[in-house]
Amino acid sequence: MITLLTGKKGSGKTKKLIDLVHGAVSTSLGNVVCVEKGDTLTYDVDHKARLVNIESYGIVGFEGLYGFIAGLCAGNYDITDIFVDSTLKIGGRDLNDLLVFLVKTKTMTDGANVNITFSVSADSSEFPEAIFKIAEVK
Image (cartoon, rainbow, N blue to C red):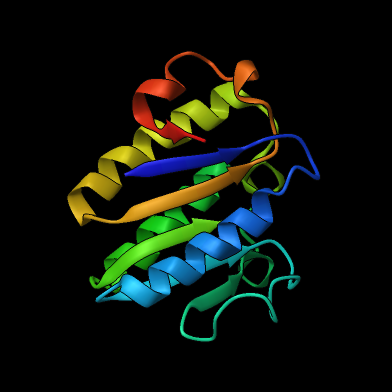
């Protein structure tokens, strides 16, 4: 399942994401991964979750982000939840490119049985209509 936490900058998406990470850590029977751009969440995310600074791996663009997430799932079959903060800062601001990325990611996550939550700094009214068929938008 794919979930998008949406809203303009400063609307509390990262706080919600952190709360969701903590909830997943307390209920998951597998591993929880939180991907961020930079190292701002180091002291906020529960130490039981794997916190990954995507900048450490030189990942840029939605193709790179897809490959990174696919690699996480392929390398660790017991990941139950992946949380990605600042999705548009990693992938780019084009919402049509986000749609293409989500279509590919949905196919992969359905097969891997992984829940992925992305924080997206945009109002949901700006999204292409097809995004609402792929992801739960909050």
